[in-house]
Length: 334
Ligand code: SF4
Image 1: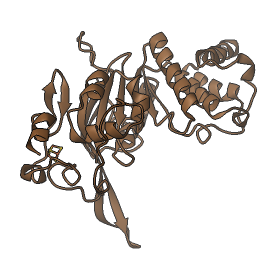
Image 2 (image 1 turned 90 degrees about the horizontal axis):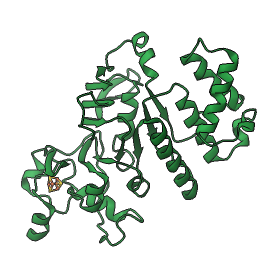
Image 3 (image 1 turned 45 degrees about the vertical axis):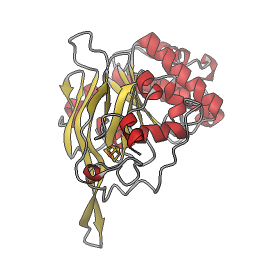
Protein backbone atom coordinates (compact mmCIF):
# COMPACT_ATOMS: atom_id res chain seq x y z
CA UNK A 1 0.00 0.00 0.00
CA UNK A 2 1.34 3.43 -0.88
CA UNK A 3 1.42 5.37 2.37
CA UNK A 4 4.33 7.64 1.59
CA UNK A 5 2.11 10.69 1.00
CA UNK A 6 -0.95 12.13 2.68
CA UNK A 7 -3.22 12.03 -0.40
CA UNK A 8 -6.17 9.68 0.03
CA UNK A 9 -5.95 6.29 -1.66
CA UNK A 10 -7.32 6.10 -5.18
CA UNK A 11 -9.91 3.56 -4.04
CA UNK A 12 -10.99 2.85 -0.50
CA UNK A 13 -13.66 0.35 0.50
CA UNK A 14 -14.74 0.43 4.14
CA UNK A 15 -16.62 -2.41 5.85
CA UNK A 16 -18.61 -3.18 2.71
CA UNK A 17 -21.60 -5.50 3.09
CA UNK A 18 -23.92 -6.72 0.37
CA UNK A 19 -26.73 -9.07 1.32
CA UNK A 20 -29.20 -10.10 -1.40
CA UNK A 21 -32.71 -11.06 -0.31
CA UNK A 22 -33.91 -14.48 -1.47
CA UNK A 23 -37.57 -14.38 -2.53
CA UNK A 24 -39.97 -17.28 -2.90
CA UNK A 25 -43.59 -17.82 -3.92
CA UNK A 26 -45.83 -15.68 -6.10
CA UNK A 27 -45.90 -12.93 -3.49
CA UNK A 28 -42.11 -12.78 -3.65
CA UNK A 29 -41.73 -12.94 0.12
CA UNK A 30 -38.14 -12.66 1.35
CA UNK A 31 -37.22 -16.02 2.86
CA UNK A 32 -33.54 -15.40 3.59
CA UNK A 33 -30.51 -13.37 2.68
CA UNK A 34 -27.42 -14.31 0.70
CA UNK A 35 -24.43 -12.85 2.55
CA UNK A 36 -22.43 -12.21 -0.62
CA UNK A 37 -20.05 -9.69 0.98
CA UNK A 38 -19.76 -9.45 4.73
CA UNK A 39 -17.56 -6.57 5.86
CA UNK A 40 -14.80 -6.12 3.28
CA UNK A 41 -12.27 -3.28 3.57
CA UNK A 42 -9.50 -2.63 1.07
CA UNK A 43 -7.47 0.12 -0.56
CA UNK A 44 -5.82 0.60 -3.93
CA UNK A 45 -3.15 3.28 -4.38
CA UNK A 46 -2.19 5.17 -7.53
CA UNK A 47 -0.18 2.99 -9.89
CA UNK A 48 -0.77 -0.02 -7.66
CA UNK A 49 -2.29 -3.43 -8.36
CA UNK A 50 -4.36 -5.16 -5.69
CA UNK A 51 -5.54 -8.65 -6.57
CA UNK A 52 -8.73 -9.87 -4.95
CA UNK A 53 -8.66 -13.66 -5.14
CA UNK A 54 -10.78 -16.57 -4.00
CA UNK A 55 -12.89 -19.44 -5.29
CA UNK A 56 -15.97 -18.91 -7.39
CA UNK A 57 -18.85 -17.60 -5.24
CA UNK A 58 -16.65 -16.06 -2.52
CA UNK A 59 -18.05 -12.58 -3.23
CA UNK A 60 -15.07 -11.03 -5.00
CA UNK A 61 -17.01 -10.03 -8.13
CA UNK A 62 -19.79 -8.60 -5.93
CA UNK A 63 -17.16 -6.30 -4.38
CA UNK A 64 -16.23 -5.11 -7.89
CA UNK A 65 -19.85 -4.56 -8.87
CA UNK A 66 -20.53 -2.69 -5.62
CA UNK A 67 -17.64 -0.31 -6.35
CA UNK A 68 -19.11 0.27 -9.81
CA UNK A 69 -22.42 1.06 -8.10
CA UNK A 70 -24.32 -1.57 -10.08
CA UNK A 71 -26.52 -1.89 -6.96
CA UNK A 72 -26.91 -0.22 -3.57
CA UNK A 73 -24.81 -1.40 -0.64
CA UNK A 74 -26.27 -3.07 2.45
CA UNK A 75 -23.65 -1.27 4.55
CA UNK A 76 -20.23 0.30 4.23
CA UNK A 77 -18.58 3.03 2.19
CA UNK A 78 -16.79 3.34 -1.15
CA UNK A 79 -14.48 6.29 -1.73
CA UNK A 80 -12.78 7.28 -4.96
CA UNK A 81 -9.94 9.74 -4.46
CA UNK A 82 -11.24 10.47 -0.96
CA UNK A 83 -14.80 11.18 -2.09
CA UNK A 84 -17.66 8.93 -1.01
CA UNK A 85 -19.57 7.62 -4.01
CA UNK A 86 -21.81 4.97 -2.45
CA UNK A 87 -24.70 7.32 -1.80
CA UNK A 88 -24.32 9.78 -4.66
CA UNK A 89 -27.26 10.10 -7.04
CA UNK A 90 -26.44 9.04 -10.62
CA UNK A 91 -26.33 12.66 -11.83
CA UNK A 92 -23.49 13.46 -9.41
CA UNK A 93 -21.83 10.10 -9.90
CA UNK A 94 -21.63 10.40 -13.71
CA UNK A 95 -18.68 12.84 -13.85
CA UNK A 96 -16.80 10.68 -11.35
CA UNK A 97 -17.32 7.52 -13.42
CA UNK A 98 -14.62 8.88 -15.70
CA UNK A 99 -12.10 8.00 -12.99
CA UNK A 100 -12.91 4.30 -12.76
CA UNK A 101 -13.65 1.82 -15.49
CA UNK A 102 -14.15 -1.93 -15.74
CA UNK A 103 -13.04 -4.77 -17.97
CA UNK A 104 -15.20 -7.90 -17.70
CA UNK A 105 -14.46 -11.54 -18.42
CA UNK A 106 -16.28 -11.99 -21.72
CA UNK A 107 -15.14 -9.44 -24.30
CA UNK A 108 -17.51 -10.78 -26.96
CA UNK A 109 -20.58 -10.21 -24.79
CA UNK A 110 -19.54 -6.70 -23.89
CA UNK A 111 -18.88 -5.47 -27.45
CA UNK A 112 -21.69 -4.52 -29.82
CA UNK A 113 -21.26 -6.97 -32.74
CA UNK A 114 -22.60 -4.43 -35.26
CA UNK A 115 -20.23 -1.59 -34.35
CA UNK A 116 -16.76 -1.19 -35.81
CA UNK A 117 -13.85 -0.78 -33.44
CA UNK A 118 -13.67 2.88 -34.46
CA UNK A 119 -17.30 3.45 -33.36
CA UNK A 120 -16.85 1.38 -30.19
CA UNK A 121 -13.93 3.58 -29.12
CA UNK A 122 -15.25 6.90 -30.44
CA UNK A 123 -18.44 6.61 -28.37
CA UNK A 124 -16.82 6.91 -24.91
CA UNK A 125 -14.25 9.42 -26.22
CA UNK A 126 -17.13 11.72 -27.27
CA UNK A 127 -19.01 11.08 -24.02
CA UNK A 128 -16.12 12.07 -21.81
CA UNK A 129 -14.60 14.78 -24.03
CA UNK A 130 -17.61 16.28 -25.86
CA UNK A 131 -15.68 19.37 -26.99
CA UNK A 132 -13.27 17.33 -29.16
CA UNK A 133 -13.43 17.98 -32.91
CA UNK A 134 -14.03 15.04 -35.26
CA UNK A 135 -10.34 15.01 -36.20
CA UNK A 136 -9.22 15.07 -32.55
CA UNK A 137 -11.66 12.27 -31.72
CA UNK A 138 -10.26 10.17 -34.59
CA UNK A 139 -6.71 10.87 -33.37
CA UNK A 140 -7.68 9.75 -29.88
CA UNK A 141 -9.23 6.52 -31.25
CA UNK A 142 -5.98 5.73 -33.09
CA UNK A 143 -4.00 6.57 -29.96
CA UNK A 144 -6.13 4.09 -27.97
CA UNK A 145 -5.41 1.39 -30.56
CA UNK A 146 -1.69 2.15 -30.21
CA UNK A 147 -1.93 1.92 -26.43
CA UNK A 148 -3.34 -1.62 -26.57
CA UNK A 149 -0.95 -2.65 -29.37
CA UNK A 150 -3.60 -3.17 -32.05
CA UNK A 151 -2.76 -2.06 -35.63
CA UNK A 152 -4.48 1.17 -36.66
CA UNK A 153 -5.85 -0.47 -39.81
CA UNK A 154 -8.09 -2.68 -37.65
CA UNK A 155 -10.31 0.29 -36.80
CA UNK A 156 -12.89 -0.56 -39.46
CA UNK A 157 -13.29 -4.20 -38.42
CA UNK A 158 -16.15 -5.72 -36.45
CA UNK A 159 -15.62 -7.58 -33.14
CA UNK A 160 -16.12 -11.05 -34.68
CA UNK A 161 -13.11 -10.48 -36.93
CA UNK A 162 -10.77 -10.53 -33.92
CA UNK A 163 -9.40 -13.29 -31.67
CA UNK A 164 -10.46 -13.49 -28.00
CA UNK A 165 -7.26 -11.79 -26.85
CA UNK A 166 -7.64 -9.00 -29.42
CA UNK A 167 -11.24 -8.44 -28.36
CA UNK A 168 -10.09 -8.06 -24.77
CA UNK A 169 -7.57 -5.45 -26.01
CA UNK A 170 -10.51 -3.55 -27.57
CA UNK A 171 -12.33 -3.68 -24.20
CA UNK A 172 -9.21 -2.35 -22.47
CA UNK A 173 -8.92 0.44 -25.07
CA UNK A 174 -12.56 1.34 -24.45
CA UNK A 175 -11.91 1.42 -20.70
CA UNK A 176 -8.93 3.74 -21.32
CA UNK A 177 -11.02 6.15 -23.41
CA UNK A 178 -12.06 8.19 -20.36
CA UNK A 179 -8.44 8.45 -19.10
CA UNK A 180 -9.32 6.56 -15.88
CA UNK A 181 -7.19 6.44 -12.77
CA UNK A 182 -8.50 3.01 -11.77
CA UNK A 183 -9.49 -0.04 -13.79
CA UNK A 184 -11.38 -2.93 -12.22
CA UNK A 185 -10.50 -6.14 -14.07
CA UNK A 186 -13.22 -8.65 -13.20
CA UNK A 187 -11.86 -12.07 -14.24
CA UNK A 188 -10.59 -10.17 -17.31
CA UNK A 189 -8.24 -12.93 -18.49
CA UNK A 190 -10.09 -16.00 -17.16
CA UNK A 191 -11.66 -16.98 -20.48
CA UNK A 192 -8.41 -16.72 -22.46
CA UNK A 193 -5.80 -19.36 -23.39
CA UNK A 194 -2.74 -19.51 -21.16
CA UNK A 195 -0.36 -17.75 -23.56
CA UNK A 196 -2.94 -15.05 -24.40
CA UNK A 197 -3.61 -14.53 -20.66
CA UNK A 198 0.07 -13.73 -20.17
CA UNK A 199 0.02 -11.25 -23.08
CA UNK A 200 -2.98 -9.38 -21.66
CA UNK A 201 -1.46 -9.33 -18.17
CA UNK A 202 1.79 -7.95 -19.65
CA UNK A 203 -0.23 -5.30 -21.51
CA UNK A 204 -1.97 -4.24 -18.28
CA UNK A 205 1.38 -3.99 -16.52
CA UNK A 206 2.81 -1.88 -19.37
CA UNK A 207 -0.24 0.41 -19.30
CA UNK A 208 0.10 0.78 -15.56
CA UNK A 209 3.75 1.79 -15.95
CA UNK A 210 2.92 4.21 -18.81
CA UNK A 211 -0.23 5.78 -17.39
CA UNK A 212 0.10 5.27 -13.63
CA UNK A 213 -3.32 3.65 -13.31
CA UNK A 214 -4.39 1.60 -10.30
CA UNK A 215 -5.73 -1.90 -10.93
CA UNK A 216 -8.15 -3.92 -8.86
CA UNK A 217 -7.59 -7.36 -10.37
CA UNK A 218 -10.37 -9.78 -9.44
CA UNK A 219 -9.41 -13.36 -10.18
CA UNK A 220 -9.66 -16.97 -9.06
CA UNK A 221 -6.35 -17.68 -10.80
CA UNK A 222 -3.54 -17.40 -8.27
CA UNK A 223 -0.86 -18.44 -10.74
CA UNK A 224 -1.62 -15.42 -12.97
CA UNK A 225 -1.76 -13.03 -10.03
CA UNK A 226 1.58 -13.97 -8.43
CA UNK A 227 3.84 -12.24 -10.92
CA UNK A 228 1.75 -9.18 -11.73
CA UNK A 229 0.37 -7.87 -8.46
CA UNK A 230 1.78 -5.64 -5.74
CA UNK A 231 -0.64 -6.78 -3.04
CA UNK A 232 -3.12 -9.64 -2.59
CA UNK A 233 -6.39 -9.91 -0.65
CA UNK A 234 -7.80 -13.42 -0.27
CA UNK A 235 -11.57 -13.81 0.14
CA UNK A 236 -13.54 -16.69 1.60
CA UNK A 237 -17.31 -16.70 1.89
CA UNK A 238 -17.79 -12.94 1.80
CA UNK A 239 -14.85 -11.94 4.00
CA UNK A 240 -11.19 -11.10 3.43
CA UNK A 241 -9.16 -13.69 5.32
CA UNK A 242 -5.67 -12.51 4.40
CA UNK A 243 -4.01 -9.41 2.95
CA UNK A 244 -0.39 -8.63 2.29
CA UNK A 245 2.20 -7.94 -0.35
CA UNK A 246 2.46 -10.55 -3.10
CA UNK A 247 5.86 -11.57 -1.79
CA UNK A 248 4.54 -12.06 1.76
CA UNK A 249 1.42 -13.99 0.82
CA UNK A 250 2.98 -16.24 -1.79
CA UNK A 251 6.14 -16.96 0.20
CA UNK A 252 4.54 -17.50 3.62
CA UNK A 253 0.72 -17.54 3.68
CA UNK A 254 -0.61 -16.93 7.21
CA UNK A 255 -4.18 -18.17 6.84
CA UNK A 256 -5.00 -21.90 6.50
CA UNK A 257 -7.31 -21.15 3.56
CA UNK A 258 -4.60 -19.24 1.67
CA UNK A 259 -2.22 -22.12 2.33
CA UNK A 260 -4.67 -24.59 0.84
CA UNK A 261 -5.40 -22.37 -2.18
CA UNK A 262 -1.71 -21.89 -2.90
CA UNK A 263 -0.95 -25.57 -2.50
CA UNK A 264 -3.46 -26.28 -5.27
CA UNK A 265 -2.32 -23.50 -7.63
CA UNK A 266 -0.21 -24.83 -10.51
CA UNK A 267 3.14 -23.11 -10.78
CA UNK A 268 2.71 -21.27 -7.52
CA UNK A 269 5.44 -22.10 -5.06
CA UNK A 270 6.12 -25.39 -6.84
CA UNK A 271 7.28 -27.42 -3.88
CA UNK A 272 4.29 -26.85 -1.57
CA UNK A 273 2.68 -29.93 -0.07
CA UNK A 274 -0.84 -30.25 -1.46
CA UNK A 275 -3.52 -29.50 1.15
CA UNK A 276 -6.87 -31.00 0.18
CA UNK A 277 -9.76 -29.26 1.93
CA UNK A 278 -12.64 -31.41 3.08
CA UNK A 279 -16.19 -30.59 2.00
CA UNK A 280 -17.52 -27.79 -0.16
CA UNK A 281 -17.71 -24.06 0.43
CA UNK A 282 -20.79 -23.59 2.68
CA UNK A 283 -23.76 -21.68 1.26
CA UNK A 284 -23.60 -17.88 1.66
CA UNK A 285 -27.33 -18.19 2.43
CA UNK A 286 -26.44 -19.74 5.76
CA UNK A 287 -22.76 -19.14 6.50
CA UNK A 288 -21.31 -21.00 9.50
CA UNK A 289 -21.05 -19.03 12.76
CA UNK A 290 -17.67 -17.95 14.08
CA UNK A 291 -14.90 -18.33 11.54
CA UNK A 292 -16.58 -19.00 8.19
CA UNK A 293 -13.76 -21.41 7.36
CA UNK A 294 -14.09 -23.60 10.47
CA UNK A 295 -16.10 -26.34 8.71
CA UNK A 296 -13.13 -27.04 6.43
CA UNK A 297 -10.13 -25.88 8.43
CA UNK A 298 -7.72 -28.63 9.49
CA UNK A 299 -6.76 -26.60 12.59
CA UNK A 300 -10.24 -25.56 13.82
CA UNK A 301 -10.79 -25.59 17.59
CA UNK A 302 -13.70 -24.67 19.88
CA UNK A 303 -13.28 -20.89 19.71
CA UNK A 304 -13.38 -20.96 15.89
CA UNK A 305 -16.97 -22.23 15.95
CA UNK A 306 -18.36 -19.30 17.93
CA UNK A 307 -16.12 -16.27 17.47
CA UNK A 308 -15.33 -14.65 14.11
CA UNK A 309 -11.62 -13.80 13.96
CA UNK A 310 -10.74 -10.20 13.07
CA UNK A 311 -8.02 -9.38 10.57
CA UNK A 312 -4.87 -8.78 12.60
CA UNK A 313 -1.31 -7.93 11.68
CA UNK A 314 0.60 -11.21 11.79
CA UNK A 315 3.92 -9.97 10.42
CA UNK A 316 5.08 -6.67 8.92
CA UNK A 317 1.73 -5.62 7.47
CA UNK A 318 0.62 -9.11 6.49
CA UNK A 319 -2.91 -9.43 7.88
CA UNK A 320 -4.85 -12.62 8.52
CA UNK A 321 -8.19 -13.40 10.15
CA UNK A 322 -7.35 -16.45 12.26
CA UNK A 323 -7.40 -17.16 15.98
CA UNK A 324 -4.05 -18.91 15.73
CA UNK A 325 -1.02 -16.69 16.20
CA UNK A 326 0.81 -18.59 13.53
CA UNK A 327 0.36 -21.65 11.43
CA UNK A 328 3.52 -23.02 13.02
CA UNK A 329 1.64 -23.19 16.35
CA UNK A 330 -1.13 -25.10 14.62
CA UNK A 331 1.20 -27.52 12.89
CA UNK A 332 3.00 -28.18 16.18
CA UNK A 333 -0.22 -28.90 18.03
CA UNK A 334 -1.64 -31.39 15.49
FE1 SF4 B 1 -9.00 -22.30 11.13
FE2 SF4 B 1 -9.84 -21.35 13.45
FE3 SF4 B 1 -8.06 -19.99 12.05
FE4 SF4 B 1 -10.60 -20.15 11.23
S1 SF4 B 1 -9.87 -19.16 13.09
S2 SF4 B 1 -8.80 -20.38 9.99
S3 SF4 B 1 -11.10 -22.23 11.81
S4 SF4 B 1 -7.79 -22.01 12.98
